[in-house]
Length: 327
Figure 1 (cartoon, rainbow, N blue to C red):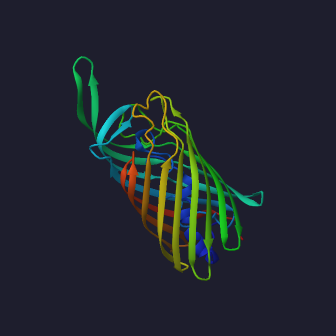
Figure 2: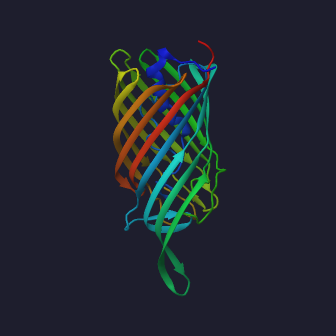
Figure 3: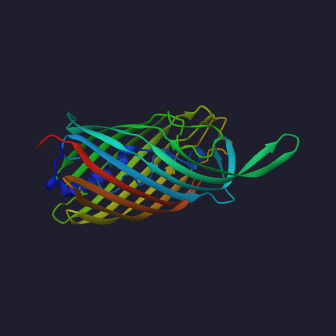
């Protein structure tokens, strides 16, 4: 039976953004100028887990609009493309189980994320016709598809106002993928991401500072013979909880590929990418009948970009407790 968590209003708000790091999901360098770890998923409450045991459900929704310039090339689905523009919407229903198990003094949790989304992409693709020469053709692709599921395990600790977590997420490459297709949501490769995060929250003043740093290790896409290099990502947020029901703040991220792409399919070379994003964040708590709902919003404007898409990104996440024992 669902409990109302009246004494956890601020924490429930933070949980709505905490669920973002459980998705670890894909589509936005690397092959195709995209990466597994969706930037901006660890902002407010990055180092916190739900405060009680039980089953929670969250639905992070992600929107991205951006592109490559006409002078930059990117390899997508085995083809070389320029002038790429893309609009992406992803919905990532996530279940998290806060177990009663303690390891090394930390609370153990598991999470599973499904992924469904829509991609609208256009590009100028270079083609090489033997005996004739090289030309280009305008291509578009617009489709809904199912992406790769993600499995996660988390350990969380807290000491006074400080909360921190260690997280591992694994991308399972069983989503809808087709070589040569522009609009692929599945990465078609195994990926492991390791991230540590921390949150300092003063419940008396309402001020919160959160941050995270992680590393992503990519397997090879066997269909394209392309192995994406290793990557790091950093995120930070500062916010003020003006009441148990509302907060405002700023968040930022930085992504850097630290080793080059390789394999027979990496015809553009190491293709190391980077990007920085910055923007506002907000969260709110409210009731839908007897059900407590936490909502969070993040927006990012990207800059300092190399070898990947440049644009605008946004998150909208809703979270509810599903099955929680009486406390």
